[in-house]
Length: 406
Image: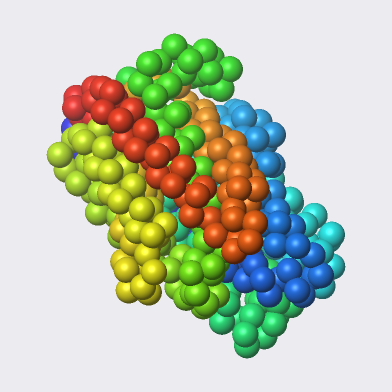
């Protein structure tokens, strides 16, 4: 298909699907213990916090691996960069299934999968810019980010049912096989780049990690965006990690907690499709970032205060729809306002902010919950205040000139 003086290729959709499968499986393995925290703690004979560490390990590892992963992606390309993440996910995902009853080996396996995560997540905008024209990049990034939510959704909803039917060991066996299948699919179908670039030459050249870091810290809008991601991703990571503990003290069952978490992701999937499409259509980024932050703050307030199950479900869906839709637009906005910084660098740094805050928020919510009832209402009110702050900061963002000129 011709477009001005460059060409786009249908194989870009195959690449995107392969990429989405790899990310979805990695995120499923990350979140698989969140909806079964209590059962897993009993099964392994450890505390709830140690089960939380299985998820938190991904955030801790990300702090160390993110920038090296971005450098490898920028220097050696998609096959080497994303391929590293896919192989680590496949090998250690299978290892989880082979040592299901040993907590220490399980944690080691989680760390192995966690090392692979930044190689996948940091390349979302890289893959979209390499294979898609500018007018489709927010949509492609949205679909790439959507795959994160699909994996989390599967982990939230499917895991409790697999555990009920096959036990924790059976669940880990099934997920191990799935991780190997995803790795094989990636190896078979991945391509480094299309025969010709899907954009004008002046939109293709990017600065690598070291030079990119210098440019990032001089950019006013990206600094505000980093704070917004610090708050938004931290809230998401902590709420998904502690979803059962958040709603349990109000009388909701683990199954209801899992369904609520699942609806958060279903809402996020819809949001990640609809909002980036609108952003591409209207060639605007900042109004949709503001809308997403305002809506997700209201949803979080509902999750915090709801005592009835229908309101809890509705609040979870609203929270997910708006908060998770802000991710792909934010990633693309960050890539545009920091041009010519590499997409892997800008994307990786935004995700890095979320991992730092996720660790802090997860520990904070556990430390400041009610010592008698276990209620997390107090910490959640603090998160609502932080989300309100992130909305105020989003008003300060200037519109991307990159999208307006294409």
